[in-house]
Every structure is written in structure tokens, then in C-alpha cells.
Length: 473
Ligand code: 4AD
Ligand code: MG
Image (cartoon, rainbow, N blue to C red; front, side, top):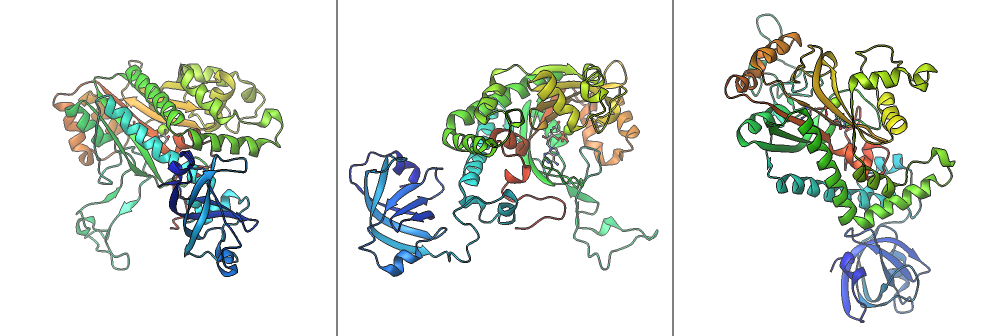
């Protein structure tokens, strides 16, 4: 039986066996045991007079044990049941002198350096069980709404975002690279006979499927070689990208809002214990901060996102708000907003969400030149049907758009952006044959994880983070 089932069972003195790891062992009598199935520990009571000194010494934090015992009502407070041990076997020792995790509070940096042991801590146990619950909720949402999941390729020959932030995939020997007549690297001799890279987004391929299967989504790893060492960026992250034929930009916003609210409600209902633990942890961490520096308590914040209508605000309106805002006038922004066309930085996004509107915000109709080539050009000729969803504490959590479905306009945009048309011949062809209005978006899975768990660094919600100069494990 899992500890999750045991701690919920009626204690009738029944005999049980568990295999799990020691969190703490105190007074030579009480073992807090955890097998990862739940955030709750099982209290095991040891009769130290029955056990040898040698065995007791091996019950240390991190050790793996097999214990047989009788489940009884707990005498102490804090738990309903406890296991009276009748047989203890040490399956795997953990030398207390050497084991990196001590029964005390460790810094997040330290735990990141020990990411191989993080799953054994309370906090990360909760985070990664939630990660599972959340990805399940996402698949359930789309499945229940008639979407088909498409596995888009990881290795591609195109740049979906046109931003040039790609990791090259090659089997050429860097010591003896094949050269062509011009003395340049000859990609024809590479594995795929051309330049290839890890995908930055599955969108373009998802579009091809939406124009055949109607409603599709991808949920896969994406890779960005942007040199951003921040708490919001990873070089390898997971993205959910739905794509829907016949949806315009406003349908797209509705889908994104509905999806976000559904998955947040789902984890609030199905991952209660772990959310409570993270909520309590946040309250504990912030106890010493003055009232106005504290973040909104986690559970309150989640309810706030599901119970409020997301604000819809055009880029042009947002620029007006920002231009006239206090931090802009008092020159508190690092990047001051003075004219239409400026790209919004995370400080601006956070001002709009956290200070101005106090609710999740959907910004739309951005200037064409700060957005990707595939977004549908508006009648004004200078804005595109793009939308970003901004969340408190996170900033951009979703980026999406209505796609340019008109062949001539798309062809021209590709040229204007200096993209090699040849690499996108298949994409352009869908605009020639049976094209239609369609839209989609990308939801950053780890940014959503940050929001839901209240963890403040994106590296703490993915098992093994990849960031500049860091690919350990
Ligand atoms: O805004 P982005 O770049 O949009 C796209 O890739 C589109 N092709 C999506 C689509 O329309 N199908 O990325 C989408 C989201 C962002 O809003 C953010 O949540 C997340 O992906 N994201 C990152 N998350 C972690 N680390 C990074 N380096 C990220 N870059 C983007
Ligand atoms: Mg974006």
C-alpha cells in the first residue's frame, strides 16, 4: 500500500508493509517516512528496546527502509494513524555525514545544485506531483473538448518564430567539417542533407493539422538558444499549442481563458494537499516581510484567476495607460514608454496586470514589426492580430494569434522578414489550397507551473532545468 492510502485508512491494528525513505528520525523512536505518493509522512513508532543499537544508527535522513508494522490510532497530534513497527530492514543506507540533504531548511540554489535529490524533499515532491496533475488536466481539457493531440517534430528545418534563437542539430565533425567550393560549411553532407535545428515551437506543423483535423494541439518540449539568464526563461521548456480552424482572434482568447481557468480549477480540486503545502510554505516565507511586500496568498491568488473575467485591452490602449502611468512619469521604468510601437518589457506587463488592472489581462493587436511573420495583418496595415495573456507575478504566460491565411500577404511578410521562402514551401502551400481563418496560441507550461505553485524561479518547476552554461544531470 502507498503511504497516501495508509494515512487515509482506518486504524484497526491491521498489519502492513511499507517501503519508503526516512525524512526524520527523532528521539530514537519516531520515524517520519515518505514514499512520494503524498506530501504527508507516515509516522512509524519504533520500540527501541527491541531493535539493536546498530540498526537504530542506520535509520538516518535519506535512508531507504522496509518496515512491517500494525496500523493504530496515533497517540500524538498531527496525524490520525501511526505504524507500530514489528520488523525493520534497511534497504539502502544514507551516511548522515555525507548525505547532502539534512533535516533542515536548504536554499533553493543548493537544492538546484542537487537536483538529483530534490524529489525527496517536501516542497519538490509537491511541485512535481502538481506538475503531473497539471499536464493531465491539460490533456483532459483538450480531449473533452474534441481536440486531437499531434506530435510535432523536435528536429526541424525551419525557424517557426523567425527569431534565429535555435540550437543546431548536426552530426558533422567540428574538427574536419566538409566545405563547399566557396569554402563554406557544406550542409549537404550533414545527416539530413541540410541545416537542421531543435524546434522553437510546434505551431507551423500544428497549423497543417488544424487545416485537416480542425481542432488540434501539441504539448512538447521546445528549445530556445536565447541568452536569457532570468527567473522566467529556460533553454528547454514545454509548451502547449492548440490550433483551431475557423477561430478568429477573439475565439482564440476565449479558448485560452477557458483552458487556463479549467486547469487551475482542476488542480485546486485534485491536488489539494500539495497546493495547501505550497500555500503554507509561501505564508511561512513571507512572514517576516512587511504587509505591502507580501504576495497574494497562493490559494487566494488561484481563486482570483478562476473567478475573474480576464481584461481585454488593445496594445494601443495599453501604451496610453503606460505613457500616463506614475512609474513612467517618475522615470521609474527602466525602459520608458514614449511612443506607439515600443516593445513591452516585463516591467510594463507587470504594471498593467498587478497595478493598473489587478486582474489577468489579454493584450491584443500589437504592432506588426515587433511580432512574428505569421500573424494576420489588420486593415490598418500596421498592427497584427496577436494576443498575449499577462498573469500577476509572471508576466506573459500565453502568446498567440490569428494566422495570416492570405497567400499573397503571407508571401510578402516572409520576404519582408528576410526568411528563406524555400524552407517554408509546405506552409505557404496550405494558403494556396483550401485556406481559411485559423488561430492558436502557445502556453508556457513552466510559467503556468510557476503561477500555480507560487515558486518564484522557473528552474524550480522543471525536473532538470537547462539554461545558459548549465546542462547538468
Ligand atoms: O510567445 P511565444 O514565443 O509564442 C510561440 O512560440 C508561438 N509559436 C505560440 C503559438 O502561437 N502557437 O511563446 C509562447 C509561450 C510564452 O507566452 C511563454 O509562456 C512561453 O511560451 N515561453 C517560455 N517559457 C520558458 N522559457 C522560455 N525561454 C520561453 N519562451 C517562451
Ligand atoms: Mg511571446
